[in-house]
Length: 262
Image (tube, rainbow, N blue to C red; front, side):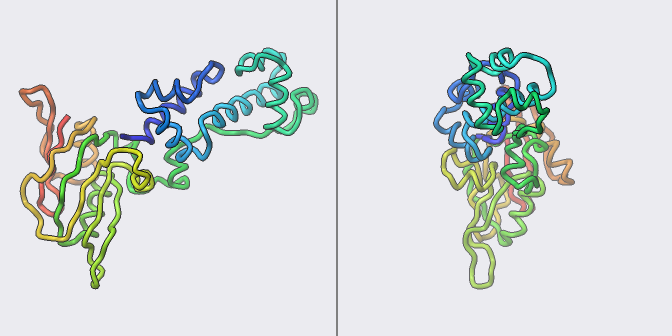
């Protein structure tokens, strides 16, 4: 499950419905996910709760209108979901440190809370190991066992060619990888165990030069395009199968074959 995309979709929905009665349960339902897990992931990716995010964005936008327009305070309060001047003024003062009337009179520079980007938050502003947005596809089912003699090289191949994430968990006395994982989602999320495992278990051993995994994806054509754009040509064209799905196969740097289907 692509929690970064789900969270970004929810943030976009908040922005589009900022003046409406919207909350975590409504947002989770719109993304067809559990409200409990949605709220937990939102807090991790955005560094605030859903309710805090909505309140902070409302106050930031309301502050701009107080300082830069002549719209009445009551109309601004109603626009951003407050039913009275009093409740709006209390929330405004908590956020900005001054009342709306003082802010308007003095043309004050008010506190701003910008729209959050989950990917930027997760990576400190730097998108590492490939961009989920650029990648354009989601892996929905994996779990294959993969053997490789050079785990570091294989891990880098998954990162560079498929835009995956991963790490080596165990090394031998010569610092060669013995066990590791590559994942469809960032490692920071995978370790929380709040989403199904969507990755591959890697072990040190002789590579198996045949199909070793059948992986359900959303966006198989995007997967094909992404791998090609990264300079990897050992991938079959997308085929429309008689049963109605689409498939393609990619031969990895170790000669193993991963078959993706949608």
